[in-house]
Image 1: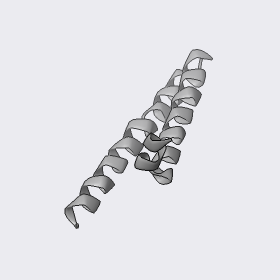
Image 2 (image 1 turned 30 degrees about the horizontal axis):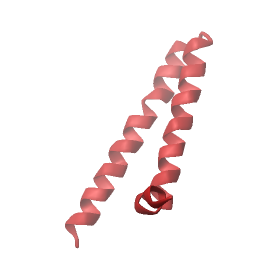
Image 3 (image 1 turned 90 degrees about the vertical axis):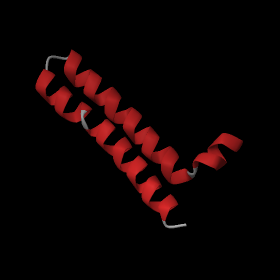
Amino acid sequence: MNFLKKLGLANAMMLLLCAAIIIVAEYLFLSGEQLHGIFIGLWAPMLLGLLILFKMVNNGSK
């Protein structure tokens, strides 16, 4: 529970969204829609990168 408080609700939701995106991408890729799976699978690293960028900008302003 302490880890969840430290992480924050918005960050936890973003990580859950990234996990859901990865699961959907894997499903699409393995069901024969390889290009759609790859396209959707690239969203998760992009969202994580934005999350890191926003954290860096927020920490720099303090």
